[in-house]
Length: 295
Image (cartoon, rainbow, N blue to C red; front, side):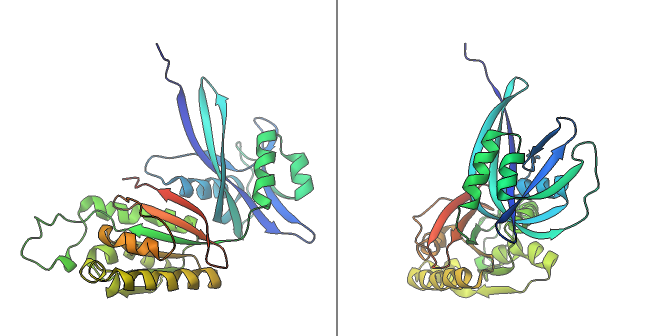
């Protein structure tokens, strides 16, 4: 009989800042274990894994980060189970003075060679080596709108005006930490109500303007996919050259044309799911992530 092994899901970052002669790496000291380690922690219920990485980094070190490229997952045994930690490159956004506590009493920056000596774990040292060799990229988040009211409920009224159901309203709020994790500061969306209401909570939280485009609606995008692809290609180029993390929100039938604009094969996305295309300055997709909805 096969014994089920408990799997603990966690996330963390290799957060970097520019030093005088080399990148500097953020490490934290845990008094309970008397070790130096990368900031990381367990996934909470209803949380995107990328959001967990940023939250845990902030909680353990008082350092705000924006995620760059995903690095790797490492696993190790803990208390009769296995802990799986996914790491991203973290780019420094802001610093606060760290208040020592029972979990982490110190957070400090180390030059690369010193970090590789200071980190207590060989597998984490390898993660650091991988992180510092990854290229700089900018994320373009391709988001399917949150769960909408059913078409049968909306029969007899313009489909363009169909909004979100109660679950979709919760999803639109749950997606805020995901977009925050990647530092999104530009919002592009279909003009359909269900798309506008998906991005509205995030836009309101950061007082961002919303660039709403009729070309991305089902009514316009399904019969004219070439225009959708052309606009996405231009948006990807703008994102890559400006370095401004961007989200674009659309509909399931229009997603293949949107993805084609970034050179990505069609993917099936559930409501409130997202693809993260990490773009090099040339516009080439260096890495692709998928985040499933958490609600």
